[in-house]
Image 1 (cartoon, rainbow, N blue to C red):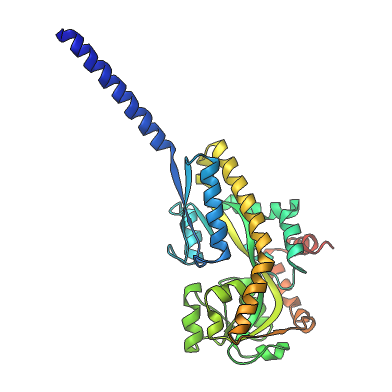
Image 2 (image 1 turned 90 degrees about the vertical axis):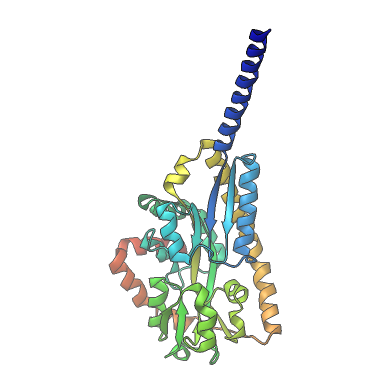
Length: 330
């Protein structure tokens, strides 16, 4: 009897141990990727990330999850790049690329793209995909380049009609050397100020204006302190979407496939929303007293040749000329 009870106890213990082992193995299989960006929690960027995270979880049956940290909770754009490179954050988004490969800034060369259709055609082409692979040698997989969009001129002083209207204005830019060089070439004084400090810098007069993409301008309420918006489309900038290379390669083949599919689907959805969003927010800002004017870009474009020459010396003329050819279909 005693032996029988012992055998039953051992059997139950073995089954319990097996169940615990299987449960532990399942728990170990589940993992959560940390994703950070500086855009607001109600921005189109964050909406796309929420869709991305939901699809990753669905495609992997919950074994791979994505935790999103918007609003610069884990730092501004440059620190996010550093943290992804170090593996402290798994996935990041932003326009700061010096910590990945400075040549990625070339997409911000002035008047490089005619319109959004030209941008997307380039990014989806073999040349565009090859361009984005530059991050791989530095520990990053570039998942996509979402539209940070075409940038405009906005300030608290007066409308920008001609290049001379920029002379002497202190204009905030992101920490992008191409944008800083372009603003300087156009006669303004570029000030690289962290994204989260722009509103107070405008409010206090530290800067006179910004050269924003309109969704950031709206989401961050910069229009409250800079009422003149001049639509120039002078630069297109990317919101680069990247993952730590080691982390990506540590995922199973099925998880990488699920993640890649979710990236592609989120990119398509994001692009499909842009036109409607721009129409809505411009109307809303106009109702709040923001004044919009169109810019004749010809005189501005004529001034930007030295920017191409400057970065041709930095990155190689062949590199810049090839990009210009691929982007403009020349």
